Image (cartoon, rainbow, N blue to C red; front, side, top):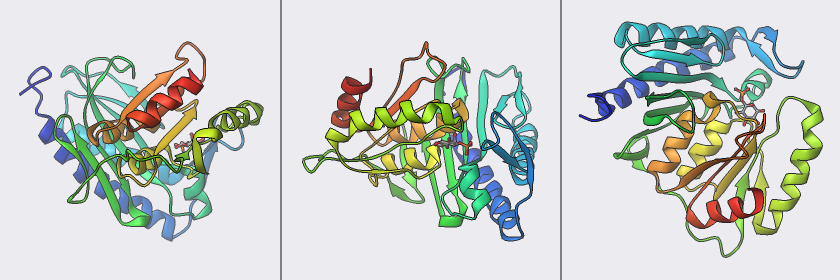
Length: 265
Ligand code: LIP
């Protein structure tokens, strides 16, 4: 036992089980048509009825299995607990992809210990389910990262340049600055991908399908699970410019991580 007598292995098994069930619900709702529930920070920042229903399923399952844990979800906010464990949840990451019928969306569930601040929490377990793609990625602190039964490992050879992913926020006024950031990073890149789900981008870094990832302005629920996947796959994740309203997240194997930090810090 570690982290205040919390069994990370049991949290991992629970995260995987709930992410799988929540992913199937998201896929079912997508198959019958998606209803827009509301817009948030901008007209482009949408929430669907499925986002809310999936988060409710996750929250209900966790309350039943782990009643004393805290919760922080993208759609329903936070609730306190008394066990030291907080579940950080994005019910459908890649919501715009989901609304348009594109398969690159994911259910992201992480269990952290101690603080709910990303620079202070201790990640314990993670699950990222991509139901439309038939894949589930998971990790347990100190126990490795997996896609199904396949162990994950970040890449190390970037002699041809790094295959990088990034993303852009919902506020159009930030796009010029983010595109300028892309321009500064391209000299180390072989190419760039923009998948639309931070959790899935980070899972792909962990799986060696991307060499690295960088993005400004993510919310804790976007990266809580994916960051542990990368770390348990031998990579590194850092938050830069944390005093700004849009901190920068970078992830990759050692060389890519350090080269992104040198450019973006
Ligand atoms: C999304 C992130 C993505 C980012 C989008 C959005 P959401 O999260 O996963 O990387 O580029 O702007 O923040 O809103 O789909 O949960």
